[in-house]
Length: 363
Image (tube, rainbow, N blue to C red):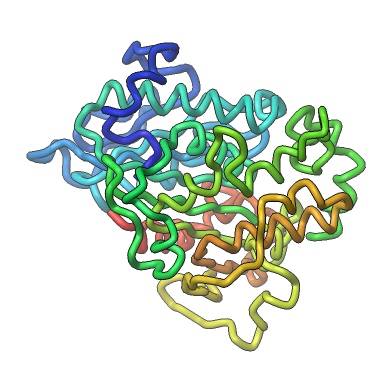
């Protein structure tokens, strides 16, 4: 894959990045092969030091005003389930008010942090990103920075035709990026208050028109300049969007699931699964014939036009969509945080969603 595993092709870009193998403030790495998580103090369960070092790096990315600890529950259970396969790094470079600095700034910080981890663990061969809310955009920006365009023999068109036949000639193997994101009414209210979130607010509400350039979120649905946003996303073997059906007062259902209103599943089609009681619908990935051209990001002027352009382009990616409902949960008012078990005391009902993600991960 193209997001920085291995490292042979990345040496030119790494010269300006810090090489010290020291834990950064606020972040921590969890691995069963270590004596314990660096900087976290959590238990090391699930198999101890195996005969081989894990080769798969999972990077978690928090949302707005979040921290590395938000993914602590998921990190612990990733290691318990696959102690010899994965290392989980909970990113801490974009926490608290630093999440107001803008998607681009945060994406660059994340790249530096990821590369510093990879430099300390040369055995790593694969990478995945697990991101919550705004963290999904940060991760997408970061993988565009890490991405190197494929050679002429490594065609992405083949990937579009068959989602099971992803390009495999990149030096690092394959990856996946589940995006855990989550009432439409508050989205509209928040539009007028976007200034509270600084540059990130401008990016999120498409208010960052500068120098005749398209807003950043529109740039991020194409290969814009030397940042190959879509190609980088396509290089992952699996892209998954976990979305809240209701109770999420930060991100609406259709927004988080990258769908139009009429594309949302009907309630009568929801399923009951005793293993994952809050997972109510799973839409398998499918290739779509989308009428899209890069010129559209310049032609879109109104907010609705921009939204449609972003939907068109992002739907060129064969997303797997997992719809989650906490309607019957006492924690439904905290759905935006419960979906990732941000704090176990308040968000424990989301544990089955975390287990669903772990059980269906590609290792």
